[in-house]
Length: 312
Ligand code: TUI
Image (cartoon, rainbow, N blue to C red; front, side):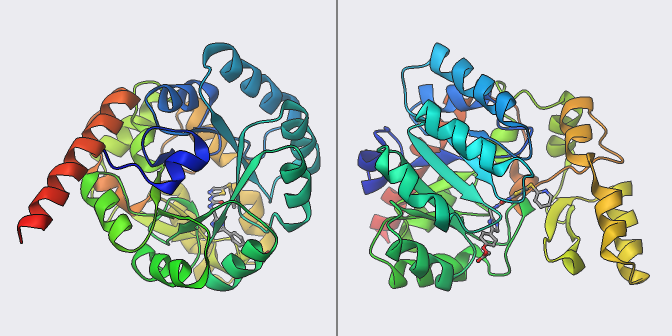
């Protein structure tokens, strides 16, 4: 049922990839998603290389299934983290917040699959020429660091521009979203926000509770003037960021205000003054379920949607 090119490429059962969310996508979540037939991803975020090595080894110990690591190019440790994932021969690498161009050949030489997240057609074209295996076209509905275009307009334009498989991301959390992505020409989906409320996700319980309470209009984009806009749940910290924008504060003030705030929310549960990154679909996340249940529901619902469509 619903097998696509992405399933063959990544050796997975369902065309569902879990988003690499810094301090949220730990080995525990990644293994749960991979064991359930999707592709689990450990997020490197801005953690040091030895932390990531430890997560990779933990995952290898508890699953035989393929999994991936997401590299975040704004990390001060990016070169050491790349060296670590190469040494560990992680089967799949996804990337975000920058251009992975200069590292692509070293991943390919080791038979690792490389799937960058891209916010535009131009970067999609450039990376296809450099030999990446697939692309994740991520719309501005996503949580965390975002581009400008919505999933609805980005995905079909990227699909038309390249010949490699495209995975849709941003605003997808259920079977309807999966079928919509396939209708736009994608071969699969990346889901972040919904997996935050997987039982196996190790993020602080206060973060999960904040997601269960959140409604459709509860996210906001902060930090636009820095060139690295970030979608988060509205809270005291996001209000402080708005105040900086109103005051046309220098960029260093944004950096000072944001420093360590994501980890503070994810690990210590500071929901009021932490950076609680969330996609716009958070209003649809209403229960905590095992990753397997989330994936099975998405797949069953997708089949129902396709049957309904074929009756129209
Ligand atoms: O990377 C993400 N989402 C993230 S990263 C993150 S950690 C962070 N914390 C504070 C500030 C900034 C980041 C939280 N969420 N999604 C994938 C993504 N990649 N979105 C946008 C991009 C992107 C942007 C520019 C990818 C490539 C790119 O290329 C620019 C260039 O060099 O051509």
